[in-house]
Image (cartoon, rainbow, N blue to C red; front, side, top):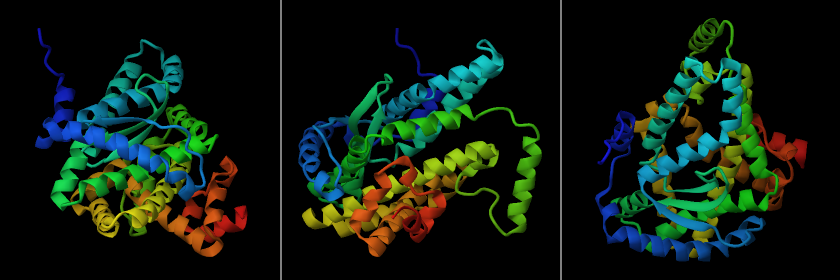
Length: 343
């Protein structure tokens, strides 16, 4: 007997949508192509980054739904220790704990379903089973759709997408402490979730203050920033600073290697940047806090280029020396301050 998909599953499917060519031979051909391209790009990234890139990752081509499922499962394992502590405080059988888990899982799935229409690839740090990952997952429907919509040369666009994801692999494989540092931030963020007396009054006061200053009620962190405690927001700022660095660094490397190897790199880069600025999704990004992700590319790229301009490319690598060398969120916007402190 075939079981029907639960209501939240059907909603996720509707949000994620489908692309017709994903159900054709193009999908299998893309899988073979990306395996070869991943091998080729893996040989180029170490010299461009100065970071080691041992061996080869597993290469997967996934559908939008599979990308959502893998991320929900991976994140569930990442936060499991913190979730256990929360259940201990509330009581494992507490209706509040069970309800919070259902709401969190559903909300995460819906947001990821929306993102699944846009993301092209992802370097997976944690596998759905909870083991450390070394997988590059490319979202096949989106790559095929972008190629045809924008008349990209498939060989060049696929090479360019692989550059970005394999630069992320070099960051997390070539910097020994980076994976554990990131995982620690995620755990710290979840563990800092606790009842906050007077939260509603604090939120209303912050909204009034922002309005009086002529600012939108929600900042880049969206609802997360509004409802998060000061302790949580401090962790969010550290996560955002780290992701701005790795995204900006990855984007600069991607563009430069692309310029050396691809004729259409400039056009692809321009179109992808315009896509991130799509005003039709701006309200959703601001509401959910995903605007942070969009700004990570821009601010991170400006930081990397600013450091290089002032002190050379080798100085950029100082950011990966130790956790203490990472730029703060304020330093991301003012590279000179970071250089003064670290270099």
